[in-house]
Length: 386
Image 1: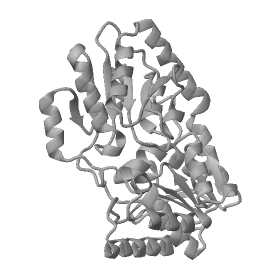
Image 2 (image 1 turned 30 degrees about the vertical axis):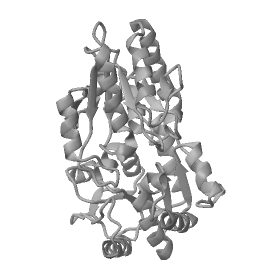
Image 3 (image 1 turned 60 degrees about the vertical axis):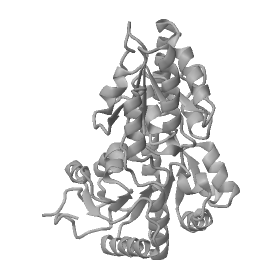
């Protein structure tokens, strides 16, 4: 953390995540609202290219050494000690945890230290999807971490019910939110491209659980009969995840030329605006942010009929459902969209935007976080001491 930390920590609110990128991209307006309300905000996450931008907002930043998929006992103990030490040093009055490891590790440490906190369940994660060796341990740790939380937010009803049914959270503490919310002003509506072949786009980390392979296979099928159609794939490779797709496979996709892989891009909005439809054939989600962003921009989506995804669209009105792990069914839906008149697709575009405005406004989410802080004292000023 920088040298601007004030000595009075009573009004400090800590936000934790496994990347600074996440906090800046998804919680920027939450940070600004907390600062506006007079709280001293501290963001704690591994260092990346976006860490300094958190400080530019007016928050303080603390680096934490944490690996996303590392489950080596020694490394995890070191991470827990670093988290425990950071909480002892900053003495926050409340902690908001985002992403799985932060929910568990910070939740356990906050509970031990008697610091009030809130966990945010944005999805079940790889351990729950594959139910491997760490599945039982993850459940036990999640139960311990959630038991001590003041509140546990979920992004879809099915995840919430799963946690309640498996006694991983007290039903009285569980609350549903519309994902991380959407800033409909920032993600302003843009009409669909007209008079050109259909353009599809998938935006995701290159991991199998996101359905990337199904997207590539479906694109190859469609290209046989509709060679002018475009299939953009945007997202980082080489990620830390047990289902990560290797470099050799990515190179083979580029040689096949069924998809246009453009890697990671900061200017996601401009890429979505080039497309007619977003595609996310994921195996399970909390509430897929890219689908909400695309809808706000006026882009309907094809998603799999699985928890989280099915709640992100209204099938047949703001998007379409397809079978999970089925490139053939995904290709059938794509074919229908390619053959659809422009005027019909425009109706999907308008309906997607209207749904974001009425049901997924970011204001709903931010107010839910502010409500968690009822009765917590604020510093006299949110200006950092010199």
